[in-house]
Image 1 (cartoon, rainbow, N blue to C red):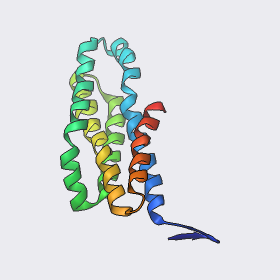
Image 2 (image 1 turned 90 degrees about the vertical axis):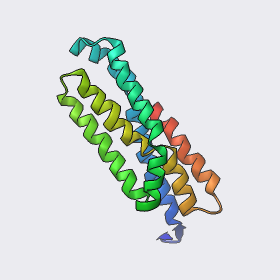
Image 3 (image 1 turned 30 degrees about the horizontal axis):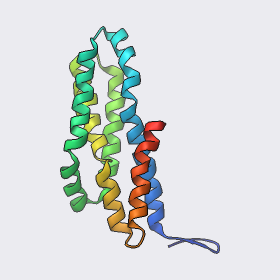
Image 4 (image 1 turned 135 degrees about the vertical axis):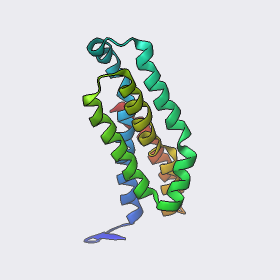
Length: 154
C-alpha cells in the first residue's frame, strides 16, 4: 500500500499504470509504420512490396514471441522483460535513422522492433493481472488490453 495522507493506494495499481504507459508506447510504435511507408519509398526509392516485407516480419515476430516472452516473464519477472522490450524498441527506432539498405529495415523494423513489441503484448497484461491481483484480475487485464488500442490511437 502507498499512502498519500488519508488516501491509501494498492501498489499493484501503480504497476498497472506503468505497464499501461509502456504498452501505449509499444503499440504506438507498432502503428507508426504505415505513416513511414511513403517517406521510405520516396527517400530510398524502395518499392512498397519491399517495405511491406518488413511490416510482415514485424507482425510475425509480434505474434511468435508470445510463448517465449511468457516463459521469460515466469523466470525473470515482467519488469525485466518489459524494460528489455522497451529498450529493443528504442534501439531499433534510433538505429533506423542510420539505415541505408532495405535489409536494414528488415532487421531493425522487422526483427528488433517486432521482438520488442511482442514483449509488451498480451502476455504482459495477463502476467501483471495474475501476479498482482486476485479480486479485480479481469478489470486489470481489460485495462491493459485497452492500452493497445490507446497506443494505436496515439
